[in-house]
Structure formats: C-alpha cells, structure tokens
Length: 455
Ligand SMILES: Cc1cc2nc3c(=O)[nH]c(=O)nc-3n(C[C@H](O)[C@H](O)[C@H](O)COP(=O)(O)OP(=O)(O)OC[C@H]3O[C@@H](n4cnc5c(N)ncnc54)[C@H](O)[C@@H]3O)c2cc1C
Ligand SMILES: *[C@@H]1O[C@H](CO)[C@@H](O)[C@H](O)[C@H]1NC(C)=O
Ligand SMILES: *[C@@H]1O[C@H](CO)[C@@H](O)[C@H](O)[C@H]1NC(C)=O
Image (tube, rainbow, N blue to C red):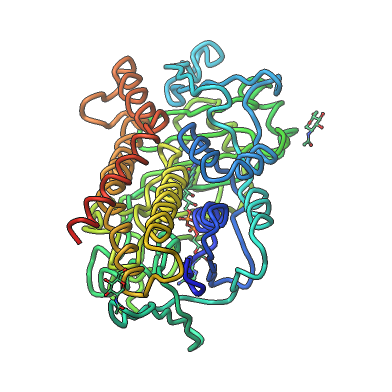
C-alpha cells in the first residue's frame, strides 16, 4: 500500500463510524471529518434488524459487542426475549365496553432471536466513538466541496473554515442534508435535496415506572405498533427497560416550510416545536390505549419532519473516487426501522471493496503502485458499488413509504384487510432482514473485476 494512501470519511454518525471501524479493521488508513465539535446523537431510540447485525459482525465483531452492550431485548424476561412485532388496531373501540374491544391485536411477526432490540442512540454512539482512535478524527470540519484535480492526483476536500485536506477517496456519510451529495449531483439539481413525506414524528423517552401502570407490564416491555387512519404509534423499551421509546407518526398535508438560501430546496430545519395538546387533538377519537399513552408524553415536544429521497432517487451514488453511504445516498422514512441498517450494509460493501483494492495493489507489487493506477482501482471499486447497492437501498426508501400506508390502512392493495396487510408486512420485512450478504459481497467482487477489465 502506498505510504500516503488515505480515505476521507465525511460525517461521524452511525454510518460514518461503522464504515471507519470496518476500514480500520482491514488496515485501511482513514480520517473522519465531522462538522460538529463533538460526536452527537439524539436522545431517542434506534433498533437494528437481523441484516444489520450480521453486517456488523462481518465489519468488526466489536461493533456487535457495542450494540449488545446498550441494546434492550423485548419481553418481561430479558434472558428469554420475546422476539415478536405486534400490530394492533389503536383506533376502533366500543365506548360501552372499551376494555373488551380496545387495541385489538391484528397480527404478529416473528423478528428472529433478539431481532429487534432497542438502543439509546447517544449511548450507542459513545461506544462506537471509543473504537476509533482520536488521531484519525477531525472535529469541527464542515465539508463544503471537493476538487478532482486529475487522474494522477489525490482529491482535495474543502471545509467551511477555509482549510483543505487531501485524500485518495472520499466517502460521504454526511446524512440526509449531505453536502457530498450536492457536490456530486450539483447544487441546482433537485435530486440533491430530500423531500417531505407529509408525515411528522413526535419522539419521546418516557420513564418506564410511569408507563407500566398505564399500559401494563406486557405492553410496556414489548415492541408494539398501534395502527389507525392517518397516524400510527410505535413503542419499544430501551436502556435496560428503564425507558420507553415512543414515536408517534402523524400526517401533515401542508408543506414543510423551506427557506430559500442558495436554492429553493435548502432546508433550514427539519424540526419544529410541538406539543402534547396537538397530539391529544389528533388522537381524540382513537381508543383508550393510544390516548393514555399519548397522555404520558411531556407537554412540550419536538416534532421531526420526515424527509426522504423517495420522489427523486439519486441517478448515481458515485462520482469518480467520491461515494455516498447511509442517509446521504438513500435517506428513508423510518417505517421499516431499516435506514441505519441498510447504511451498515453500505459500510460492509465499501470495506469489502477496499479489501479487494488492497489485494490488487499487492498483485501489482505493493509500494510501486503509482497514483493513477491507484485511482483507477478505486474508481473501479466505486463503480461496482454503484451497480450493486442502489437497487436495494432505493427499494427500502419506496417500501418504507408504503409500509406507512399499510400501517395507516391506506395502501391500495391492502386497505384495512389485516390478513392482507400482514402478508405484505411479512414479505417486505423478510426482504429487509434476510438479505443475502454473501451474495452481495461476491456480486461486488465480480463487478469490480468487470470494471477493471473494461477500464
Ligand atoms: C424517527 C426515526 C426513527 C428511526 N428509527 C430507525 C431504526 O429503528 N432503525 C434504523 O435502522 N434506522 C432508523 N432510522 C434511520 C436512521 O436514523 C438513519 O438512517 C441513520 O441515523 C443515518 O445515519 P448516517 O450516519 O447516514 O447519518 P447521520 O446520523 O445523519 O450522520 C451524519 C453525520 O454527518 C455530519 N455532517 C453533516 N454534514 C456534514 C458536513 N458538511 N461536513 C462534515 N460532517 C457533516 C453530521 O453532523 C452527522 O454527525 C430512523 C430515522 C428516524 C427519523
Ligand atoms: C438491567 O436490569 C436488571 C434488573 O432489572 C439488572 O439485574 C441488570 O444488572 C441491569 N443491567 C444493566 C446493564 O444495567
Ligand atoms: C502507473 O503504473 C501502471 C502499471 O501499474 C503503468 O501502466 C503506468 O504507465 C504508470 N503510470 C505512470 C504515470 O507512471
């Protein structure tokens, strides 16, 4: 490997860190450029499906340990987890006999052993950060653009504060408002910007001792999704079952306000002040279970506008030696709980490709490799990624939107026919969870060889 070989990772969220850990494990020199002055995640939950856990294992088993250290299984006996997702009718009930009709179970889906464990995002990020040496992290570096100075040169990264850096390749893990995406597609390209899905999410972590008296132990400690018209409610336990992660999705017909800075689609903020009073109004005619759960939420809440890349899927994730991963490439609505997980698949795909590039370098007699040959290998690797990854990640973006319609009884093929809804939910969830990872890895290798012989 040439002495100065270096990969720049832009963004230190879950995907940037997991990518860094995977490359580091394979001996690839990296540098992470993160805009914030510290690593930060929300005080909210996240869960990983089976595909994500398996990719983490292949990236670096230490990542699985990090997740397990902060993950909370479902169920009353944590040593014997209850690995089901439960879909309920949160809406209908008989006011004359609410206790008998409220929140009826519509369907059950087995998610595999510990197949959907909740984590506190900030706790997980802390663990991941500890796996990366401080010397490879540059905090307070906001990427604004790159320059490709030719096939025999390194790339130049530019940061907001006027500083620059060089790298042989750039991985854009800078999230839904990605600047790397804008740099690849162009600032005036509408595909560079995410779109409002007309759903907003209210999120809260509620102390479990308040929840159990209201929901009962079983509902409080197991993942549930309460369906209904134009809204739905998801909850699962986190932090050793001491907190309940609650996410409430509500339809918002009006557009989300955009602020015209450089471009009409530049978003200033994807969050706004919200209140429990708004939710009380939305759920006024729903069943008592959902209403009482809403009653546990704080008076003042933040609401998140759910943006994604659904309406304008990216035509490419790659430009030369610059590549997008995670939300930068395929920001998805969260209705499959799969956005971060598919970003972890990207990280594994990239780790595998860098591994193969290193093998090519060895075959080329090691340190003698010149910059133009290295650049050609990296471009072949990223072109292979661009062939293999988009179909699956763009499927997730589309299916997540449809999953939301299913949960809200509005998907045209299933409406409120819950036998049909469950068949759809199972089919889509299985496609996400039981992903042929080995198949992806060999496809990447095949595409890389094809690109090189073509190259
Ligand atoms: C309500 C909700 C619930 C969800 N639940 C789940 C779930 O249960 N399971 C799941 O798998 N997924 C879930 N997701 C999706 C998941 O949150 C995202 O897919 C994931 O966090 C994306 O990670 P990322 O690293 O790609 O991006 P981010 O986490 O957004 O990280 C991007 C990083 O890049 C930095 N950055 C941005 N711009 C720049 C720049 N110009 N220069 C330098 N650094 C920059 C940011 O500061 C940040 O640290 C959910 C999403 C939402 C909205
Ligand atoms: C989780 O809680 C159980 C009992 O409630 C306790 O025995 C266990 O030590 C806790 N684990 C952690 C990691 O705090
Ligand atoms: C770089 O190396 C390749 C072989 O690995 C060779 O074909 C090419 O001519 C070299 N280019 C330069 C500019 O030295």
